[in-house]
Amino acid sequence: MKQKFFSTALLFAVIPLAQAATDSLDEVVVTATRAEQTLAKTLSHTTVITRKDIENSQAPDVPALLRTLAGVEVYQNGGIGKQHSLFVRGSNSSHTLVLLDGARINSATAGTTQIDQLMLDQIERIEVVRGNVSSLYGSEAIGGAIQIFTRRGKGAPSINGSIGAGSHNTQRASVSFGGETEGTAFNVQLSKFKTEGLSAIDPAVASNVNPDNDGYDNSSVSVNVRHAFGTDHSLSASLFDSDATDQRDNSGFFASATDVHNSKAHIQKQALALESRLGENWQSRVQLSRGGDDTQNFLNGAPDAVNGARFKTTSDLLSWQNTLTIGERNVLIAGLEKLKQQVVSSTQYTRTSRTDDSLYAGYTGNYGAQQVQLNLRGDRYSDFGAASTWLLGYGYVVTAEWRFTASMATAFKAPTLNDLFYPFTDFGGGYSYVGNTDLKPERSRDSELGVHYANGGQRLDLVYFDNRIRDLIVINTLPASTMVNLNEARSDGVELSYSGQFGDTGVKLAATQQNPRDVQTGLSLLRRAKHFSTVGVSHRLGALKVGGEWQHSGTRTDIDINTFMRTELAAYDVANITASYALDKQLVLSARVDNLFDRDYTLAHGYNTPGRTVFVGLNYQH
Image (cartoon, rainbow, N blue to C red; front, side):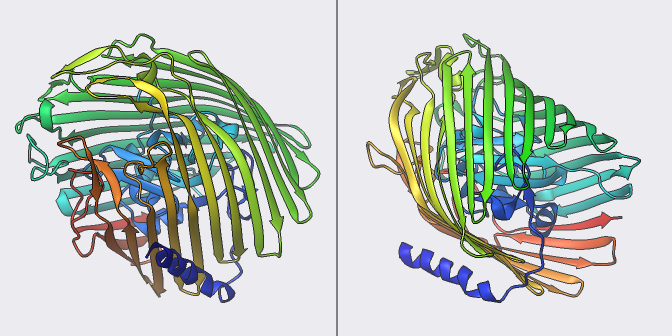
């Protein structure tokens, strides 16, 4: 059955290859090598989500957008704005590095990034690189790296805006003013999102749950300014702020059916960057950024002592990168970074800060039909020591459309401050937890082979990957718990991405077959399916554009919300449809229906997922 699933998906994608248009320009990406490179030249399996893709999808949030990609699974605990789990190529949720305009905004305590708090109205593009890229970016990039770029000003200054409303009393509004004038590009973006939501936890499954709706309210702003001093120098400044209130549920031993749980999430980023051409072939970029992740938990209006009342991370990152162009087609990069993370918390950690000093270098070369990529990086952390990583990639261009790639890379994941320094805490009922200062970083070795096709309006990536993670950090036992380097994990499989444009009809396909598992026990890793896929089709009829999307996931293993034992979640299929109509050159009316057939399915055991929902919007672009 599984082999048939993947073979059918592959056949569906490959059949149209000889028929598509050939006049589209290739995207330029920076995340795969830290230097500008066309998407057709990347050796890592990379996907770009453009602003046009975001608008066409009408997706409600970043997780909904990412879960349509090959190799990427995103689960949320109860709907929009709720805590998510992000798995790339079957790696852990903390194994994917997320950058916002090059800045780190992750939590040093939890080790994850709250992408569920980033509103799509604020985003210009997203670049997703799969596979080990620690040799470029350091810790967290075992499964891959996701870089999110906020919106920039371009063209004549203008005002743009959108409003919308939908199911669960969902409301959204956004307005921006931006453009370019006399060497200065700028953009100011304001957005508001609010929904009454649904009960995060299903009271029919879990005990002691408040059955009321758990709403979400987000206000976001981003500002970007860049001024060019002639052709050789530029100075840019940016700001991002997402402030949200999220109501959620708790269950079991620590909860009652009348409890009201709220969380306030505040994500911030400020950055200042100077770009200079120091020579004919030498480009320098210095950036100073501060990222913030501030979470406050409340129980019945008071700080929640059981779940930790406050966890605030400030990440200060100074980076200096030099890019040298050698000849016409070869690029050498070299740089240094200094990262300091500081934690303020109601939990009394035995250490509340850490630093990381790093050096990195990379080379991308093109020699006729052959491509090479080499990256090296060394990191030194103040709390556990040093880590070195490397990447070696090779590509061979068979024809103008077809090429083969192969790569090997190493990566590491630094233990979080929770893992290392969480103080001894007695939760009652015999349950307790304490950090472990003897932990080593998780380390990974990844290899992959790929076949790629690119021709005008089409792109196909078929990649085999094998990622082996040792010194995996896991919780050792209940009820008295700590973190230990114990298990070894492995995830190998095949992922397929295809997109094609045939006149007025667009087709997209993403399919993944994988086996994420604990090597010692053979058990599947939690919340990760062995196969999942998405098929999307869109068609334009004059001013009307319609689209449909089908998402499938196989069975997954999860932890029972009541018994804390392993349980199996059923496979599911969900269909979504979209439509947009251009009233004139500036006004577009749009609509999206999620879960069209009102399927009852589960992403996380005990947590609800929305049934059929409808959202209608009106977009103005000057």
